[in-house]
Image (cartoon, rainbow, N blue to C red; front, side):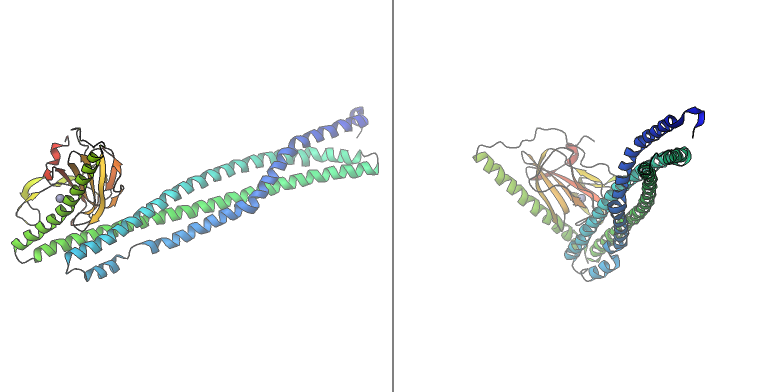
Length: 414
Ligand SMILES: [Zn+2]
């Protein structure tokens, strides 16, 4: 203790040095200890419930899917009446579409959660590394160099009271390193839990993605079933004259709805005129192509041989085949005067562009606008589907001018 002749002064110096070291180490340590207390109580519980809810959600996924066989058995009873058959089937298609959208929403939420958990895990790993480094430093200080100093401290007591104080101080250092170790263990536990949560969330995501695929397959199978039934119905009609009459009745049903909507738009136009309000006018601008992309024009505008009736019939719009869900765009600025369902048109949208010019979009799987909405050229209004009298996923796009169908291509730059 009396090395190099420094005597008691040397010990005081060492003591001061140790105090300084401890003072430097203690504040962050205390902060860590309180942070770790939070981890052990609330956050661990939160992550544990996060893990179990991801597992529960995963178990519940299969229950949300459509039982295709059961739907087909129910529909079997409706086959004698094509109208009610199509309406019932479309109800199922709309329900399935909703299930798919809900599942896709859950997938997006889960992807965000996984991203968040991933970040938390990375933070915890950085924290673990930091704690490990600072523990290594302080352990070597306290238990290697520090032990000699501690011995010095205890041995250097000049009274019993002083010795007690010094022992108290050494205990505080030991307690300090124990808390540091506890904090480190808690961080390790949290890392394990985050890894487990991530695993559970990724399993859920896989399950949800395959559930969406399964539901989409069921939906496509139902559309095929509908196409077969419409086809069979037309083939079962005894004479071609009857089949043509059936087709014409279907178009008449559409036109009746469209004419009523145009009459309502005309009444609205008069009301605005009477009130000296400003009427919407069509400035002659070019239409946007009414959809994101298409595979082919499956049935063009004009007189043609009907694809299934095999007789010449006028087609009042353009049929654009595209995968289900392809975005349908408003061809031009206007007001939505209908966003509804009809047994013939399926889910459809009709837009008033002013000056008695209207566009109609049929057979959608989903509608994104409502009656009264003001839309702009190119705005997404619906998604391609096969609702109504449709035998496959396509958009039927019609343009009406002064109560008559006109060639849509005249308004679109191809
Ligand atoms: Zn068509």
